Amino acid sequence: MKLALHRSIIFWSGLLVMGFIVWAWAISYDHRSWVNFESYALANTEGYASVGHTWIPTQNDAGHSKTRRGQYRYERVAPPFIARGKEAAISSWPEWGQATYKEVLTLAYSAGPAAAWGVFVPHWLLLLGSLLFWMALLCGRARRRKRMGTPLQEAV
Image 1 (spheres, rainbow, N blue to C red):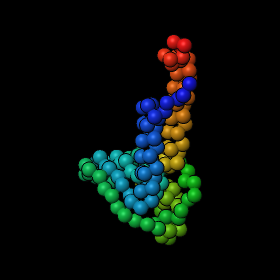
Image 2 (cartoon, rainbow, N blue to C red; image 1 turned 60 degrees about the vertical axis):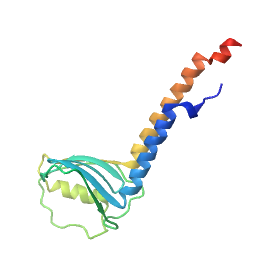
Image 3 (cartoon, rainbow, N blue to C red; image 1 turned 90 degrees about the vertical axis):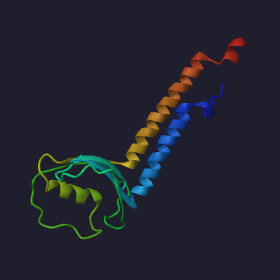
């Protein structure tokens, strides 16, 4: 029995989702993109997709995009992290390009109030998660097709 993946909505949907994640990952290194609603924000930057509650109230912005390069030290495998506000005093900021995105954001959030938080998930983790989920759906589809059989096999 053939899998007939070209006729599967699971197959094409998975390719579409993973293609979107790869595209978002690629542009996140050249552009900061974010959407604000009051003090909440969704962002795509430096290889991370993030959601957070900041201490800086904003207007209801439809979105922003900003070009930049070389602001942070490159991380080969960016780790996921959660930054929280601690109302700590910051004695000094790292030099331009000397700190990673995680180090700068952790420092910036620590200066904010205790109610501030941010969850930062790297795109590679989103891609891995969607790949595993997609493979599980495809395996379930193959198992279901094998169990049900095709009409031609039953007729023979």
